[in-house]
Image (cartoon, rainbow, N blue to C red; front, top):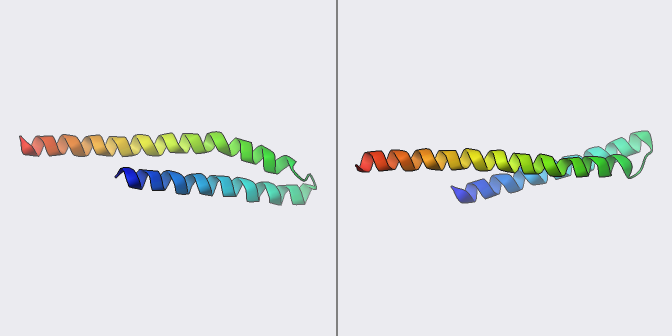
Length: 76
């Protein structure tokens, strides 16, 4: 279960960073402001990645806790 969480966090972080970079490059090309939008979106993507990581970790830990409680109830 923890390996799944690590995989999810890694994939989501990659998607957020790639979206930030490509979105920034696209906006920089449209508005002719070479590194501005790319850097702003890239730096904005970092806290978003951290928040997504926390949400995924909390959900996974809640599932593990529920599973552990159900296992302890059935074994009693």
